[in-house]
Amino acid sequence: MAKIKGAVVVDINRCKGCDLCVDACPVDVLALEPKEVNDKGYHYAYMAKEQGCIGCASCGYVCPDGCITVYKVKVD
Amino acid sequence: MDIKDIIKPENLVYAKPRLMNDNPMHYCPGCSHGVVHKLAAEVIDEMGMEDKTIGVAPVGCAVFAYNYIDIDWQEAAHGRAPAIATAIKRLNPDKMVFTYQGDGDLAAIGTAETIHACNRGENIVIIFINNGIYGMTGGQMAPTTLEGMKTATCPHGRSTELYGYPLKISDLIAQLDGACYVTRQSVQTAAAVKKAKKALRKAFENSMAKKGTSVVEIVSSCNTGWKMNPVAANQWMAEHMFAKYPLGDLKDI
Image (cartoon, rainbow over all chains, first blue to last red):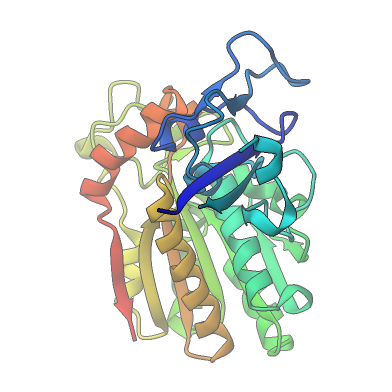
């Protein structure tokens, strides 16, 4: 069965740490960086679990600042 | 499979719209404005109207909208965006003209311009962001503020006895013969964003087909003005705002 694997790339310095992508993620792959901050001082979003992403792009759709790029592949 | 093997241009499924430039947006974290900007940029790009679109920016939080989407813009005086858009569209009928307004701009100071532009059936699109508060000036009561909702100028909650009732201006516009499409959408989930995008596309197509005025109301959150975090504000919006401002098409001819 073909399995879908996704990856999320966050434009760290554009991110404002609003948490909406984390809330929208159906597989809880995203999280806000607990310690590190970006140039603006926000705890930016990142892929906390690299393996679980299904590439659904829900995070991208709800991101108000357009910092998210989503990729996905089918793995046989 | 390593994550680096997935991140390749051929596997791309979602990215920042091409027409949205790299200027960092001044909006508060989690503000719905950013999502609507993205949708407008995507729809204009998909329609291939990049060089033929003129936006009219309002006064309010979205006053700097012209900094973020790479099309032609005109800034209007407070509430006068539909009047400016009328002139632009009449002088340039081949251009796609839209206004982008908040509830203070469209439903308070600009009520007359909005109603009359819709009544004349100008072939423009009005994108109306309804977050029930004056966000830019610090969270004062707007005409669309819900009954009982606390703001800086009604700290005990909006009393209908003192301030009247929340203004459902899209319902008023739907009564006008000049308006061809009036819809109310939201952008708090991925599914809602996709629906809102379809509505925007339809509105832009109506304006080019000379069908009349299209109004797309986006029920939005203002987490700073509502004094909540962005996720809680979206939940509060779904629970309270949608009861007064139910989503869906109000008019579609």
